Length: 229
Ligand code: CDP
Ligand code: CDP
Image (cartoon, rainbow, N blue to C red; front, side, top):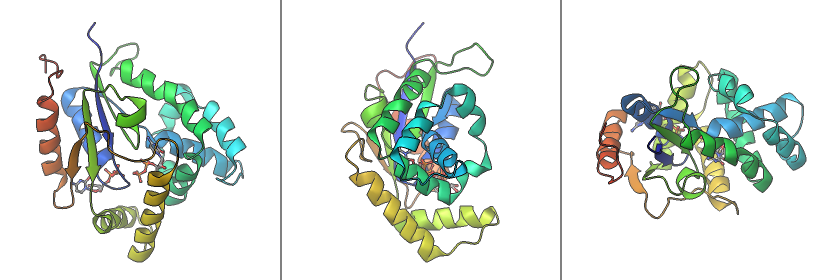
């Protein structure tokens, strides 16, 4: 069968990459993997076991213990979406052995994307995160780097938090976002940055529909885009 067509989407927090990735996958009939959820799962398991998120040895053990059977059911768990878990995720994600432990799962998913029914495969995969185009799938034929001004992203995250009934203050959300952006961009291994051949999509002035249309136009323009779609 033909190789999986991989769409790699990276970008900072609340840039809209998850929303975009889900919609692209649904439209193309591809599988979707939110790679941030893997780092969140490691962070959450540390917090639940009473470890500090800075405990590198515990983080490595937790990452090595994750497999499809434990991770995939967790994906929709609201506990994973808490901001305290995002911060823990960004702390465990600086540990090189944690990143290494999560690589095979991500590459396997990209190359053999699960289909809708058990035992079936999809023709492609959409993965979103921080290093999909640079490290996980550098050979992906379609890479996008989604950004937006930090103030715009903080406002988006604030309304998401308020929609879930959480109490949130704009200045605190903005400050947290700046700290996490800096940690993600400045770490030694797999820092957040666009792949050299990534399509840059600044969504500061775009709604989700406009971002989706621009992304689809780019993906369709790639020479490797399968002609059956
Ligand atoms: O995955 P990431 O953290 O990058 O962002 P997200 O979870 O997709 O959330 C982005 C939020 O901004 C959602 O509430 C979207 O409805 C909204 N949004 C968007 O996704 N894309 C735009 N171009 C504008 C707003
Ligand atoms: O939804 P949001 O963009 O806020 O965060 P996320 O995508 O769920 O990622 C949470 C944290 O995991 C990020 O701040 C990164 O530190 C880390 N992460 C990473 O290092 N590499 C990835 N491919 C995805 C996430």
